[in-house]
Amino acid sequence: MNLPVYLDYNATTPVAPEVADAIIPYLREHFGNPGSAHVFGQRAKLAVAQARAQVAALIQASAAEIVFTGSATEANNLALLGVARALGRPGHLIISAVEHPAVMAPARRLEEAGWAVTVVPVDDCGRVAPQAVGKALRPDTSLVSIMHANNEIGTIQPVAEIAAMVKAHGALMHTDAAQSAGKVPLDVAALGVDLLTLAGHKFYATKGIGALYVRTGTPLAPVLAGAEQERGLRPGTENVPAIVGLGEAARLARERLPEAEPRLKTLRDRLHEKLLEVIPGLLLNGHPEQRLPNTLHLSFPGVAGRELLDRCASDVAASLGSACHDYEDAVSGVLAAMGQDAARAMGAVRLSVGWMTSEEEIDRAAAALTAAYETGRASR
Ligand SMILES: Cc1ncc(COP(=O)(O)O)c(C=O)c1O
Image (cartoon, rainbow, N blue to C red):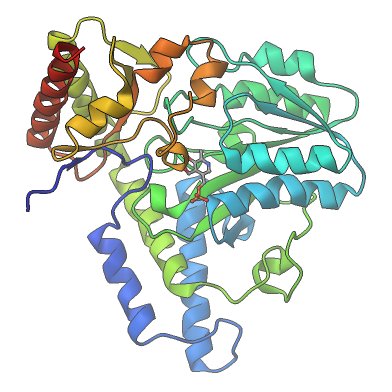
């Protein structure tokens, strides 16, 4: 069977062959517990240390600042709830209106626990204005969490500018970079953040592995209670194979980024241009430039996005917005926050390319999407 063209890399990526090769020995032979003193344990411990250094190198951090977690969701929870626990009293948190549920939901938890939460708006491109964060800062603001790049529209936030204000105010800055790693360069010092979230399965490692960068000296308490793994910040025996895979994925991403970033952009723009040739009323959602190089979020005029994807499901595998909501037809909260009307939001489709995408696939997907669009329009 001919599989559809995969254009859903923001939902998850395939595991890179190099990553799979790196993992296999840790499934087959090197099964030790990194906490064991014997040779089996030490072998695993060394592999975890190497992966920690590789992940740190991807974001220009030092290895001691990386905490492995079970997912980006867990890293976000550790950042928000862990800072709250370390501070020991309710404070004020600022987030944006387009955060992933993995930030929105822990923020709501903090609110239930007595924190004040301010949600700053975004403009019609999905960008947070640094001044809006500046205006929201209060004397008791202790934490600000603004995502680096949005999972649906790909808009990249001015995190460095925001972090500079937040730090000058004396608060802590977290950014959810689950969608950015491996797609755009990340430098924690240049960004000026204290905490940064990564997700393995968004850059060719496996699912169920993430990491939180914790700048040295950042107040953070564990959310889980247990033993002393990950300096006590994330107790539980390390998932050695997944950690090894994350390290290899970070190494690959760092090596490939200079070539991959422009290549992804070319493929994405080729798809956009081909669709525009046939569908001039097509609208781009997200920032035209400050956007992930692989993400194309479009509103098709006069058709429902769900209907369009169903019509070409044998040729194209893509999502409406975030994978978490793909079976619901509710209007995306991200598009609503950008002030888009219901018709534009209903016609939205997210097309995201990746390392394995070819030009031929782009052309096949463009043909299938335009055909599905034209059939959809004709049947109305
Ligand atoms: C921006 C962002 N943050 C967090 C997550 C959560 O990742 P995971 O489901 O792997 O925990 C995702 C996944 O879609 C994401 O796109």
